[in-house]
Image 1 (tube, rainbow, N blue to C red):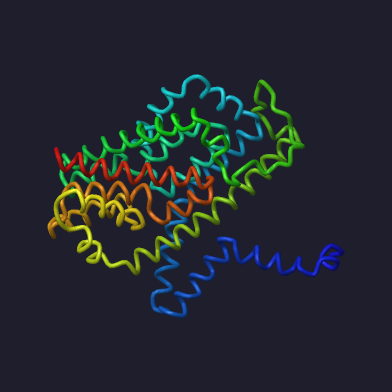
Image 2: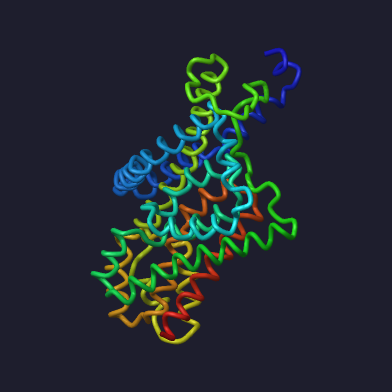
Length: 342
């Protein structure tokens, strides 16, 4: 209180900092919808709430796992698992990403945990890029709506994009880039917690300091991920509600390379999850969209939608964010051109 009295600008600064938080942005967006389109307010809130609740199970699992590893000291083992095996980890991450049932937002908690535990950014990027593109259920859905050639092409594109991104980041890191990729997602402790030991203490609850670290890590990391993913899904709800599908069809129609590039650029901010995209793209292709443009649109939308970008921006520094987008768009355009040629 004395500090606030001595510094009259402190309350104003606190107010400005509060306005800049994702929670304030969410409230502001929902308030605008309530004023400008009150009839659609309930649908926007319901859509965002359901999406966040679905992702909540992944957030809970990831945060519990991360907190447990931190409290026990087992993150040392995770870091050691990556030493000297970066190439192998890039391959495994790209392939495993194709099996993981995560969309571009659901993968964020696991990416955050891997980076916080010291996993190399190259392997993380491989998983990050490949995971939203395909998984066994969406492979079948894509095959049913667009045919097996398209589904197999998408699966190959997912693994190839992961490998491309992983090795590209590894090359950049060897040149001195991305020494510290995280923006603010860091341990909640103040440096006075239990020292790291060679052997983890698996029964951490028997040590008061480790119990405290588990609680602080869980609270800090849960709030961080929750606020940014809540904002991401509110943005997704706005896109689904207010961006007409027929507008997209008119923009990305036609043959050649130019529609493929346009499809990637349009697909980047658009949101089409892996279950909705295949039947919708089937309809767009009937309206004149080429197969290459459809592939480019699907890959770009899965990797770089506005909800995903909002979550990624909160997690990593601007250079890593720009690299993620660049790799995603480049991979989408390349996948579309190659699929069109085949």
